Image (cartoon, rainbow, N blue to C red; front, side, top):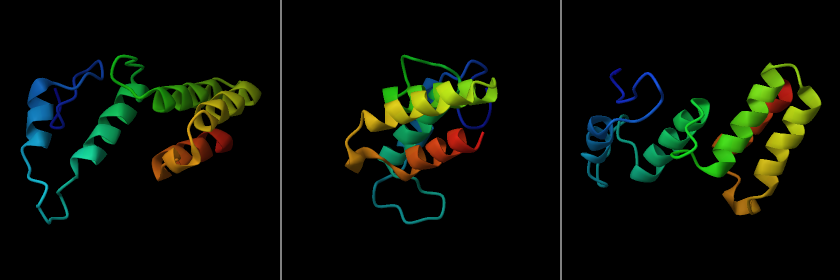
Length: 107
């Protein structure tokens, strides 16, 4: 278990989730992270580890596109990641997903 509450298999631990949830929504700090953003972190990390039960579908499918790119299948990778992003309404195209899509396209 590392200091961020994530085990070797990418699963978040109850202790890690408890630590992140301990802060208040009124905190002002360089280190305070809003709860909604923690959920994004957890989903992205779960997607990187292939944890289909925790990751948000768009994160998981976009990461699958990235893995296709890294395996050398560039045509399929971009199409797969683009389809995952296009399945969401434009207002759900977060900066994180757009950056991930860019990473796929540049692989």
